Length: 375
Image (cartoon, rainbow, N blue to C red):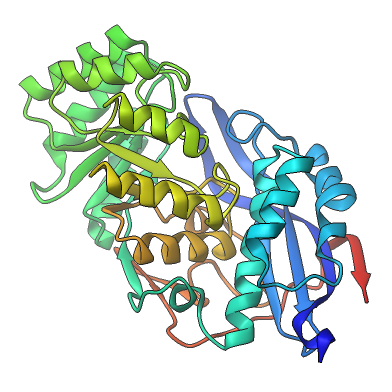
């Protein structure tokens, strides 16, 4: 039956997800996220979900441009195709657009449809039986008092890895780092994320002063500008803490340059940056070849759909670190009658745990339909 091996329909939705608290990083403040959600299905009614969280700074897309790319260029490629021809689909998508979150949206939806066809969770499709990962919890740039209050709260809840956003004012960054080092348990470690906010000299100065104070810093993420690969190498060689690249990892070519140049200790792979699982797995394989450690991350605005896919990626490629808190920074989910971290991907602090059985949930009926097609 030819139709049984085809995508016979899709629907693209626009979705607004609100943050629990305004979330400030070096590049700006986020309090609500407008994203796109894609639903695809086969003749048996089995479906796959994916989403796009475009970011001008990180993926080079705005919401409206991403919507146009999906509606006019990428989704027509799905009409009647075999969902198992994903590599061919990626080649076709790349001839049409560089839009990363748009391609990620299609990639994850088709991966999830493949899993649905087999009756497996995505992690099993990717080849692993692991169903849990320890995550950090992120604190944005805020007052010293709020930083202390949030850090104490998250530690009481059971987190032993706290990601602290820095990168606006080196002196204030240092004050917050040292204060948390004083008030938190010796078993709680900080992950610093400057989001490109420091200069080379500021990064080296702050981190050397942290070293003199015996700060418990597990890693330092993207201390300098995205394109400053030499700066990453300099900070790595002049300081003692492991250096991770995030914004600098824009694809396989960037990853290869970072690895060949010995610029970093860790690559942070995000699905939106790597246009989905297909390329993310290539980057992970490359990193393993260079004995480079791996971290999985996400962007504020990603729901359980993307975070579950990122968790499956991390499990299947044995990542060393996980930042899987994007959906628990939100008030909302795409699913009806559900709260964040209460669905197929649960939070059992400090672990994200996913259901080893395939579960599907109904989408909210208030989502705005952008476009749809049915064979």
